[in-house]
Image (tube, rainbow, N blue to C red; front, side, top):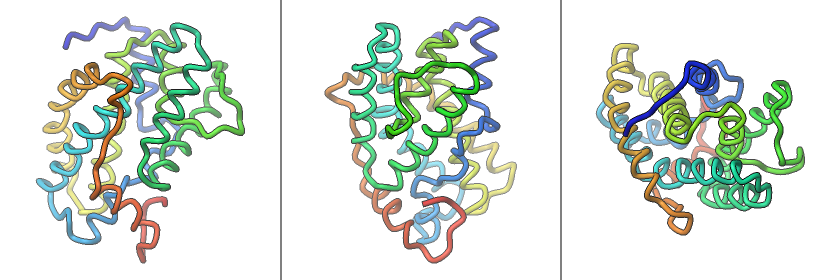
Length: 225
């Protein structure tokens, strides 16, 4: 995959995918906290396997195809189409916690968009996916899909590795080794996502759904539920 960028949209992408963006992605573990508590994930290799499966079987099949479709809807200036895609991606969240993860980050990004004078067709009363709003910002800043997908995936990956660093726990060197290994899968995931049509958007990861559901009643938690 060849990605081209101007200085302007590359800098905007770095801003949008930065860990300092105040959207709260760091507050959720997406089931990892329960998996580690139960001993399903115990070391660096098992973290790599856990995250890699999500990257290929969830992000590449739900989030990234939806991001692409939302950008197309933005280009066509179709608010109705964006609303349909928002409902689609929220329906793909298998647990209440995973849906909350998406909409809480969406709510935070929506507030930031207002501060940055970026228009949105969604109302304050709506539950809006972070993916759809990320696409709106990318369209406003003229960030093409391949670049947007790269930033979106990197941000997600960095949050997952940060969660593992706290929970396993991993050292900082191990975290950097994980990022180095897993970033090699990003282009493959983006390429796969481009072959996913709307009627094939969806994922089924039972262990992650179970971990996310049971995380709500976990005795002690660092991450939000």
